[in-house]
Image 1 (tube, rainbow, N blue to C red):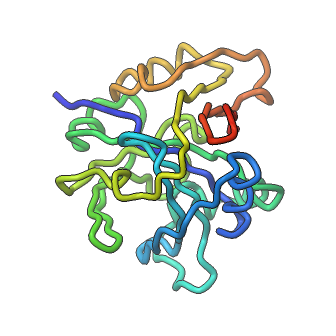
Image 2: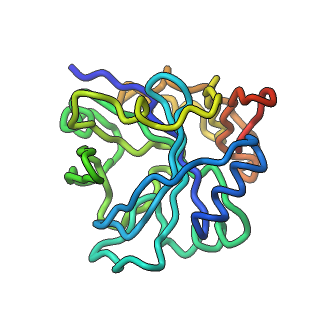
Image 3: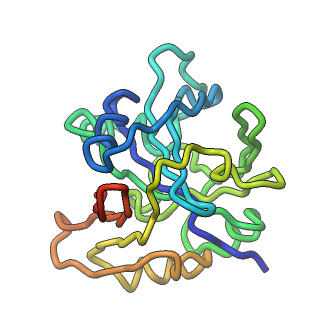
Length: 216
């Protein structure tokens, strides 16, 4: 049996500087540089959100060699590219598990192929579809299994921000709850039904040094 926990929030942007400014304007903090993902041609900035949770700002790196496969988080998807050209956004979320193979097998929707990834001294396994698409448009989380004896959030900058909740507003809440329950992630978030697909969104409630903020 595997256990599943909310791992991190993913803010995507057309450029890393745009993403950093977006987070600064909302949360009032400047997220420091993280690193590069050579296998995906992306780079990021990261900060702790308390405990084993963190926030990641990710973007395609114009200086890196394009990968041989589609990038993760749908960053090569024309619709995602158009969206991020308008403004950065909270694109999706990620969970970690104690047994990624068991989670992938238990999921009642296709999660993708398990591949190994690394950055600096961080090692993890991640389940990715061949086309790199977002799971359920970003409502289904990226699924990972850390391969170290520590969680990386503990080494990230603590800028005084704390994740207080993640709410998924979805037109088919029962379906989404069932999908997340199959991977043990339903209790990690709140799920609220909406009548119009245009109202579907992810909303993270974050306590910041300046007060409570919603990042959507």
